[in-house]
Image (cartoon, rainbow, N blue to C red; front, side):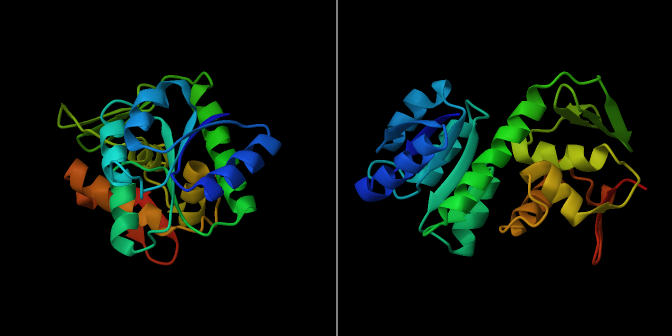
Length: 220
């Protein structure tokens, strides 16, 4: 993969570039947030530190999401719940807190690779309707009572995982495996954040049911 690394710490950046190179990834390292917005078009994945010297990483993420659906993995020392939730709500695909185990980081990157390949594979056009919510799986569009709902990439992925099995109970592990590539995703609260956002954006909280101790169901 072509990886864009936004990290201002030379020691951390050097170690990451080396291990990513050893595993076949080509990495461009930048130290400023504005450089992310310059070079993101030639990248497959962004590793984003939030403590950049010119622009806060969360603001970089917000600006990036306005123009691109590039996969973003936040890699930062900020482990407080507020930062994690904000990062996910702004559209991060994953959120890792430093110090991170390199094997775990590589596994997360591999999961993104699998999801990207799956997204690019040809699909049979399908549309799922639940109440007045229409989910076009191939076009990645959602309409509520005829009006388009603006979802982040990850929010749509979560909704699509449930829509493909509409009316059926789907385990938490199934959703995590399909969307994050890991049924026992370490930051599993990411899923809860995205579900909360989905309920709010769709304005139909009754359509997304939580099945205590198991998982979720979309529709009756």
